[in-house]
Image (tube, rainbow, N blue to C red; front, side, top):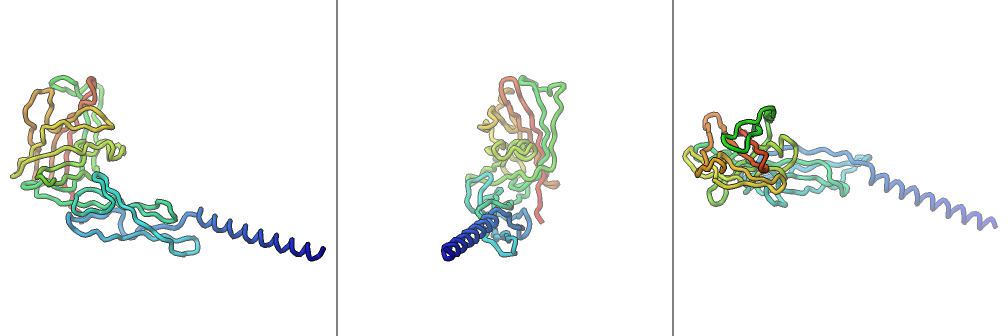
Amino acid sequence: MKKFITLLLIAASLFVSCDNTDTDNVSSLLEKPTVALNGPSSVFVPLNGTYNELGMTSTDKTGKSLEVLPYYSGKYRVAQSINTALAGEYLVTYWTQKQPSLTRKVFVYKNGDLTTSIEGIYIAAVTRTAIATTPPFAPIPGLTPKPYTNLKYVHVWKNANGTYQISDAYGGFFEIGGSKGVAQSLVNGQFTGAAGVFTPAKTKLSNSTLGGSAYINNDPDLLTTTSAPLTIDAVNKTIKFTTTWKENAATKWKFDVTLTQYQPQ
């Protein structure tokens, strides 16, 4: 009998020991690690330059370093790496303990001189005004214009065919100002030209999320045949244009956009 009781006590102690060990392992997994980015949360890389991964540190409660894995994605372009041959914005998401943790934004850019090239990374200011759906498209009384300033960042890049493309023809109004995300940007606006005169293509722009139709410096309801050139100040590094968006038959909006070229340090 004594031997039997002794065996029971040993078995019980082993069970408790294993249970405590398993509990400790679960607690270790559930407890959030201490994490910190190495370097800044935003990195600017010149077009065709080199991006050096700075990484992130992750430690458990004992101070032990944990594995960190970076994952890459493009904001305006499909990408699984930081492609410095394509201007735009990329996101690095750091994973540790099989969970996403901190993020870093990487901006690949090339700033043109605004005389021979309008490429660049820009800070935007934009004001949206509700206007009538029939000419002369006057502002609707009682609907206060909505402005946003210091929107970071709107990109203009050069395509392989020589045209220029803007990351958001709404000047970041919804995407950045309204914090709606890239799904509500108007990324397919294009420009042509050189020698200080750059003109938007007379092409209907659309967004599957927002619907409707939009034009830069043009309005088909006016029966115009060409788009007005951009207003460019090469000295002060600014570009101005207006995007008109006909949301539906009863609703029309005007976005007055000013882009100021940003010079990363």
